Length: 175
Image (cartoon, rainbow, N blue to C red; front, side, top):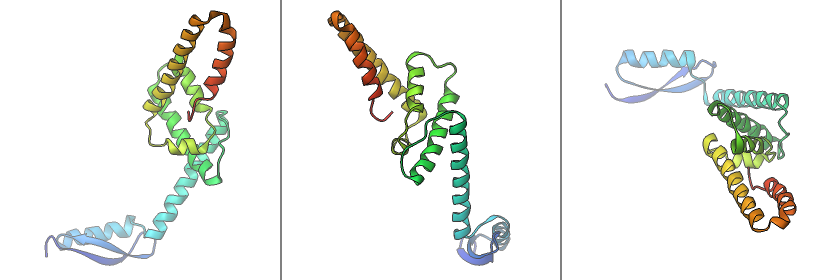
């Protein structure tokens, strides 16, 4: 019977009955069942524990956002809760990789922090903090270059060009 996998019913650590997949010799099977009795939750209890951990992380992120003066996110209640945690984690990643942000990176961080759309945070959750920061900084760099070239071409309109540039900075899509 070595190598055969079977399911045994056992009382799990949460107190509910559940199936434990065991294989190997009788000692290995007994060890697996003993471990399940001490550590494994049934599916329902696991879902509850996961939801509670998620709620706690969201509450912590919301408290830290308020404490750090970050703007309130806009979206449904669930989107805001989830996006607040995503934002907290992204900003922590950015802080961890930046020794002393300067220039376009400093402006990019401020732009990222000012994002209030929960949907944008959720939609961009898979983008690494590095690529997020680099992408926003590159937009500023590109826009700065275009503005400088336009001012050089039309120096008589410099004031109007710079006024329009501030408006363009605020319109950058997403972040």
